[in-house]
Length: 184
Image 1 (cartoon, rainbow, N blue to C red):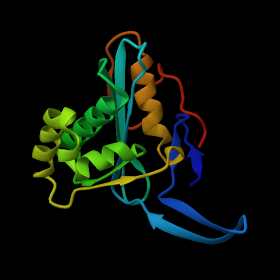
Image 2 (cartoon, rainbow, N blue to C red):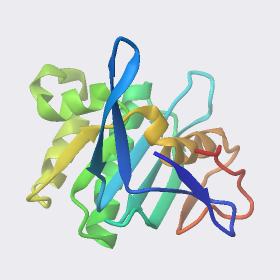
Image 3 (tube, rainbow, N blue to C red):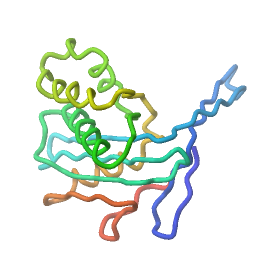
């Protein structure tokens, strides 16, 4: 995946992911997968932070950022609790702002939880909320993406977590007062 900068300094994501297949350490095949109309999400947590953070980016079928949002909240019990909170919040927002039903995360444990909630009894309350929201998404999907493909939502979540006061932002580009994400 490649990035491009816009006039606001925001790094945009192209609409594809390249999967390289290696044979004897030589690239052999590249496959292109469309990421059309997706919501990339991430949660952020550290044991020493006052807040946990989450962020999501909704991209249309052309790979254009339609909306992004970041917020922090009172620190959750663990990194995985923050990831679940990020998914719940992203789902609620997609219901309000788009027809997107396809979610992407770099957290494999989150996907395992959604696919088999009974195996995660300590998250029963949180997963019940997710299951209730899923009813509103007839074509719901959640798929793993490598962290390198999830840099903007990762950046949004980490920025919100490290903010020293409450933060809630919604927009189409990073506001001037926040630092810029790394180049992709």
